[in-house]
Amino acid sequence: MIIGGGSADVTLGVGIVHDWEPGDGSVVTWQPTPGSLTKARQAPVVAAPPSSMQAGHLRGYVEFGERGLDYSRLVMGSWEIPGKCDIRTMTHVINTHMRRHETYRSWFEYKDAKNILRHKIQNPRDIQLAPVQHGQLTQPEWRDLVLSTPNPLQWDCFRFGLIQHENHCTLFAIVDHLHCDPALVSSLYVEILTNYNALVAGKPPVVMPATASHEDFCTRERQTAESMTLDSPEVRKWIAFAEANGGVMPDFPLPLGDQSLPCGGDMMVVPLMDPEQTARFEDGCVAAGARFSGGLFACAALAHYELTGQETYYGLTPVDKRSSPDEYMTMGWFTGIIPFTVPVDPNSFEETARATQASFDDNIDLANVPYDRVLELAPWLNRFGSQFTMMNYMDAGLPPLSAVVATALKGSNATAYNDGRSPAYMYMSVIRLFDEVSLMISFPNNPIARESLTRYGQVIKSVFERVAAGRYASTSVSR
Image 1 (cartoon, rainbow, N blue to C red):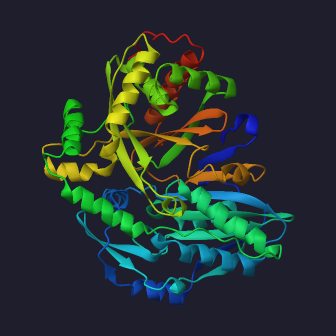
Image 2 (image 1 turned 45 degrees about the vertical axis):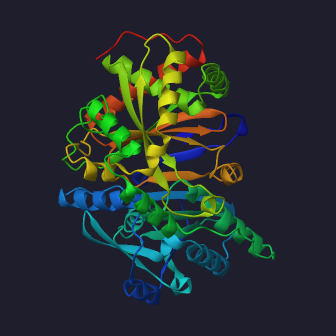
Image 3 (image 1 turned 120 degrees about the vertical axis):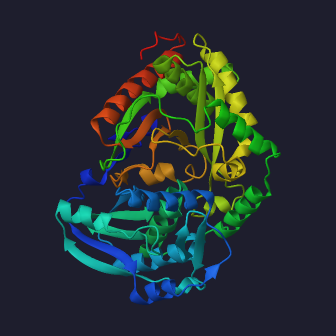
């Protein structure tokens, strides 16, 4: 499956690990040395907590395991580079990257859902990855190698590697979601590929700006959450949002099948708009007094109405909480969640988009208060059910991706993969890659969910097309 880049002639391939065919070549992975593993096991407990998203990820991994389900957790991607890889130079570059980012120095000891301890390697130089030769692998052997990456309760829940082909090599990274969000793309490309290219050309290494402390972010986030009370405006807004939605977080409107049964996960990509449609759509958003993101969430609200007839839409979206230049250079999970409520006008995209933008802007500070903290203060609310969903918006023209994504993707056969395990929930991401917009959906791999997501994709694509054409009018509600 391809996510396009329109006139920029840039594409990104996506899929699941079972579809990842690396081609003929000798495989090398970089893995921690026995000495590094020993240092990690001996790392002391430190005061900094996991971030709220890291804690939720670890809880999800444990809870899914208790239910006999294999939890989706790996973020994987690859690029092609010409020639034969200089293994010694790449070893140096990968270790420099690992030591540069504080998040890689931590591992977490799971006591229970509310008691997760951070262990931290004190000296970055105790991190040492070494190349391991695997020779040529069949596709099943390759898949098993990828899926053998340690789980998020282990320190070494990451692997780097390459496949040496005849005239080029494929560099790949496999990192547990515990340690990364979309900034992974810029960090890997700039720090590994750019530095490697400089060194093999006989040039000095690229001088990188300083990184921030991910632990400091986690500590600030926890302190902010613990300062909240039932009287805090952010908490009151979260409670009002949940109570208006029946005391729970939003559900996907179509059936997703029995997720208590192991079925793994799958992905689909729905092209939403080509370059010309994207330009017209953005003009329509501006005319309505909304930003591009407000317009796309308005389309989600209108699609929800066309599927259900419900004139109020409750949405959630993750946002990047990086707030300084050095944080934008830092690996880690810097994410918060914003809820928004949309009174849908079935006959007007403009009115719906204005209402969406207003709700989003009014609730933006709620990203600083994890919903788990709200549940502690308001225990009558519920977490979420098996139909829970969120919609993300990712624009390759905005930080942290914009600085490098064009050069990282162009001509490099860039790919991103999902591990095909059971997803934490049904997740949608609207991706604007230069001039084109696509919807990428991760869902439980069962026939009921597949049918529902296919239908949903058709409806929301129709909404975007009608808005881009300047002739939005709701279709009859089909339930």
